[in-house]
Length: 63
Image (cartoon, rainbow, N blue to C red):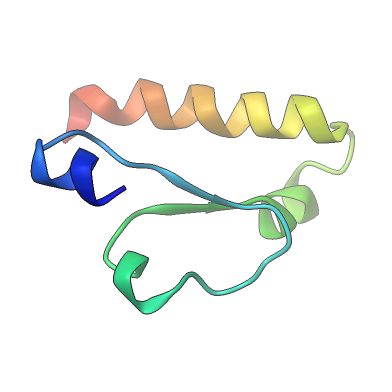
């Protein structure tokens, strides 16, 4: 991750279990799948992750 940040690459963290990220990652945007499941209970695990990643990629142009 440090190399990606040093090369100015986009890093997107995903929390699968709702855990708080380590201190060195807290400045990054994180997708929290536990919270996301509460708003999209009809999605299975794989679909939930794909949905979150597609939304994050769609938002790249807005940054």
